[in-house]
Image (tube, rainbow, N blue to C red; front, side):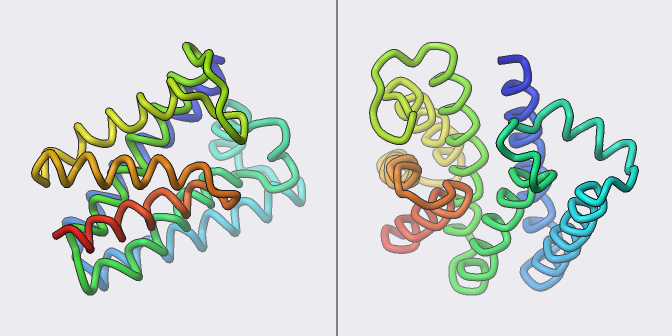
Amino acid sequence: MKQEYARQAIHLMLGAIYFCILFFLGTEQGIAALIIIFGLGSLASYLIARKKRIPFAKNILEMAERENESHLPGKAGLAFTLGVLITAIIFLPVNRMAAFGGIITLTLGDALSTIIGMKFGKTKTAHNKTLEGTMAGTIAATLGLAVLFPLPIALAAAITGMLAEYLPINDNYTIPLASAAALALLL
């Protein structure tokens, strides 16, 4: 469980950093920065998989990586970064606020649904998820979104994003895209 807390803390930190990068740098520079981060992360993953030493990265991976991800070091961070990047590429040029909302839903909803679901989840749903985790993620995402959007719209986007977590595709892609799409339709 301690490993999962570390993993979700990194998830929250990356989400906040990426949000700030996109918010303060703007569309083109923000997307370029995320592409560079993704490229450097991919290179680091490749080097670590080839047993090259990158001490700082290795320590983070050992602290937060799940056992089934050892074949691709940093898989979760790369997937998270790619999910934010895809959402930014699709939505920032046409609806900046929808893009930000998708990133908020991924950052808060996914992290809190995992933590609460693992700690307090009793009602199993699908794909090893729990009703309690999904509800916690929805509440967390709604609260984060309510800073930028009216509560009914925030709630609808949070529900859409957290239900997209159940799709049989990596939730780092489905959550922000579904939530951003809902926001784009509702705004």
